[in-house]
Length: 413
Image (cartoon, rainbow, N blue to C red; front, top):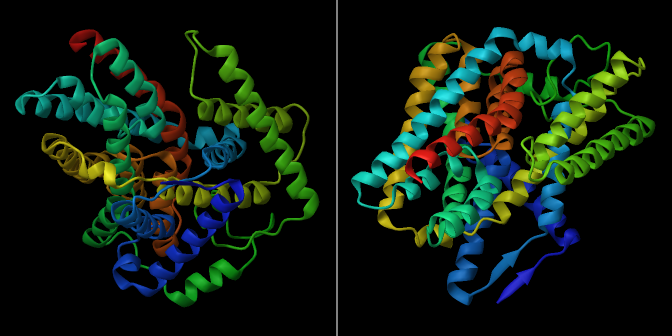
């Protein structure tokens, strides 16, 4: 029997998941010590409960996809609205170097998937499904390519395999990033963890325009921001404009050479709107309000994404696919530790970037941001990481991934 939650029940459930995650992280030393994001902690418990309900009574819960997608788009709009051109210039060569790391890993991820599939005697395209299509691409890319692989390449069940692989990646991406960064930070003595008193003082000190505490919007999601109703209404109007722009461009570009996912258009709309308003019309953007809505949307989206996971799909995976996904997990952990971390400078910023890379290489950009938040909340800010990862993970990665997948299909399809 399937139980469908409307938007109201979906929102209530997501808030409960977040409160549960916060409680678990505060009470369970392991989760706190290894910087597991609160939405991941609470969401996994909810997903496990959902699996028991399905296995015992045959109950399946479906949440409002429209609401989940809306929060995801608001999150990406907040990234765009925070990206003035001066911030983009701050990324500088670090952004270019990180993009090279990311592009190289996408190729490696597909090589591992296709290579293992060939060795295990299954269709190499199944290895591609368990590669960058679902892990770097996430559920959206898995759905889009799953249909193509079923119809045009004859891979039966490609969509189901894609959803299951993306589900696995979303979970693992949120689990391994924090512990990996913590190991690197402790091994190389890159930073000291903040005390409970320091965290409380920081989070309860309101952020204002004149505040001496400067950081990018996602570094300290729990810190108090001072906003007004007028600020909130104006900011909501900008979010609405970004979503309307994305909806129009998604339809307009469909089937053309510049077709892009809706969330990419949302991010682009935010960047355009921010810089036109500031640069041309000299309109002041209320960053604190953007911060609040962006962080709230990020947490709610992750909670809903994990609520919608159907873990029983993972139990139906063929043993060979489990082997491939396990190898992919080991590959990103080693790559982030020995390539990303070293190439990006072998310092604290590089450790935070490594946590972010684990997040979007196995799951999604929101997972990457949540991983980094868990680290910076404990060890301190990383402006460089929070400038680079959201832009790279939300925009450039999908363009690179789509190009790599299309080239591979030309050779082995």
